Image (cartoon, rainbow, N blue to C red; front, side, top):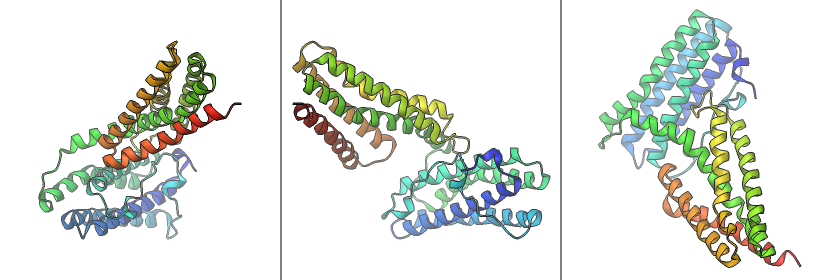
Length: 321
């Protein structure tokens, strides 16, 4: 992958064309997927597709004027800084709220890309077009709201509230949830295996603290290095990494602390109770912020936690002679 600041003006324009074409096709797929059950929303996304098509045509015309006919294929996955998009358009039936949220995120990402691209170019013509596109992207989401008001019967939420919530989810909830899930689930096996193998709360406490700290450091670095946030609006990578690392460690420490008790059986029961609470909190967060249905969230979290817990119990009871 190439770093964004290493791109030439020619490559920046080629990438912009590729991004607009991808957004246009995504909106087209959204419209097609919603047409049967949500015809009004499908019309909204068709209007957004037409706007993206107009942006692409302007970029191609400028590219031809500046650099000729050949446009190199440079895609988002070839450049650092873009967030991985979920393939919502491949799922049927499409969930309307998830689609609208993804469309808003796409608009924010595209506008940030044009702002960064404008800083990279010295050509007056390219800067002028990028300025125009930035302004159009800023009003694109407002245009989407206007389309909502014109074609959708239900009132829409305020644009500012949606943007704030989206940024909160991207910058805080997603890395925090990833860390909490990893810390709560992945440390179950070593903690309970050590507890059942040794029957000593202190030994289980030492293993749990080591596993929690190690997982926190590993997840923190993994999150910080996954995306620099320059184009996606996900915030500073090291802030996300810190959030992810702390939540990972806390997820493991929660069911480790009961093993400070001298009574082994009381510590074990308290740890199991805390695990149930942790998995319940994770399920609630997934439902509240990630729009995951209750049953699906509970099944995914509960099944994963149960499998890891059973693994730790089996190894702890039968893994040592």
